[in-house]
Amino acid sequence: MTLMSGSAFAADTSARSAEAEQKVVVAHRGASAYLPEHTLPAVAMAYAMGAEYMEQDVIMTRDDQLIVWHDLTLERTTDVAERFPERARENGSFYVIDFDLDELRQLRLTEGFRLDEDGEQVSNYPSRFPLWQSRFQVHTLAEQIEMVQGMNHSTGQDIGIYPEIKSPAFHREHGKDISTAMVRELKRFGYTSKDDPIFLQTFDFDELRRVHDEIFPAEGVELPLIQLIGGGAAYQWMLEPAGVEEVARYADGLGPHYSLIIDDDSTMDNLIITDLVPLAHQHGMEVHPYTFRADEGMVPPYARDFEHMLELFYFEADVDGVFTDFPDRVVDFLRAR
Ligand code: CA
Image (spheres, rainbow, N blue to C red):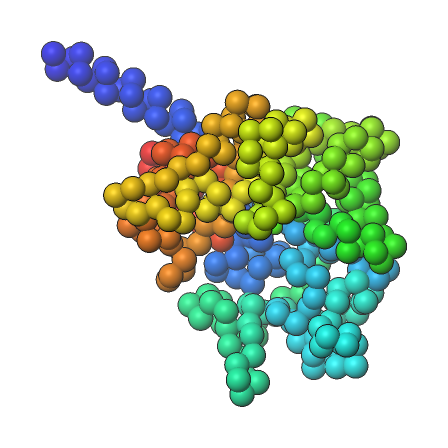
């Protein structure tokens, strides 16, 4: 009796840990809860914390360089307004695409901030890294890949990258084909097949299809593709069975906002899990929702705490990975399973 229940327990435990081992952790803009997003130190920290993929948002500069950057604009996380005050557009914003890389490298980076009613800078996440402390700079996609591949060499690991093609239509309006430039850059660094440690992501379905149907064949590569899904009406069709089937013709996985998997109307007593994960799995796609944050007020009310939120998503809703600003917390959670 004891033996039987013991071995049943062991089998159950090993099935569970095998399941946990297949789950991945994507470091969202590096270990961005602890260091300014998309800086090389934030990437090194996420790497050391054990995340399997490092995420890069990618934008093109005026002189056609690919930089790791989230916003189309610069003012949320830099001193651009002081350094280049005359370079704002009419709407008051400073656009990456209006600057050369050499100019962008002169900027100081910091945590995200906003201006309060008195024009004073206020951190968007007061408990994160302090504004303007230490020194952080803009870097290119190539420099970040060199860093990840360098750490792979020095540690003997095979940690992946997870670049996002940002706003391809905006780049096209400015005469730039960011997707072709990115695919060529990735190819130059050896990312050429679906077996390589990479996912290439974008919100733009037309562009995802173009990357799959035109750019990959033209460049002689084929990389795993992730279709990101936002909460807006424009994405509604992708949540329907026919939409998931259509996306699966091009993509290897979905990257939805997490509210599209566990509905925001859920409560502790009534968890509403949508059909999206089973539908995606039916079509052979992985599901990696975004963005898991442990900051105060960022854990949805249907979860007791951040780890409970992870439990619900990884093991109730059965997602394959999550984007997180807190890779250490997610890695610890999965290791404990
Ligand atoms: Ca992103």
